Image 1 (cartoon, rainbow, N blue to C red):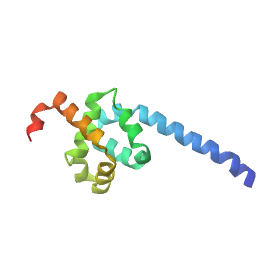
Image 2 (image 1 turned 30 degrees about the vertical axis):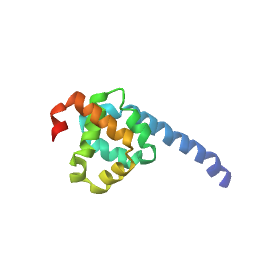
Image 3 (image 1 turned 90 degrees about the vertical axis):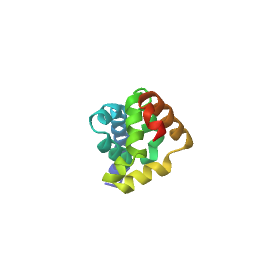
Image 4 (image 1 turned 60 degrees about the vertical axis):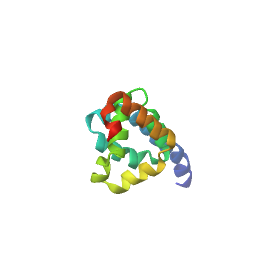
Length: 113
């Protein structure tokens, strides 16, 4: 029994990593569907891999902007303050810069608000 557990654990970790990778690949589509629920999912599943989750959105700039906007605007905090604060704490200055660059591109009027 102990040897069964030892051989199954690495497989379970591999399976979990595969599921996380597959879900990360679908993040742009999930954000397009519901940005708040997607941000909550990122907070729950990818907090240790936040950089990878955000990077997975870089090919879909409008979705990356929507994610940043949900967090920075306070919309996520209205639903779950803890998740919002946890994500914000892990944002780097580069994330903030990316958000501003995307804001100029997709919603330039917000620069002055």
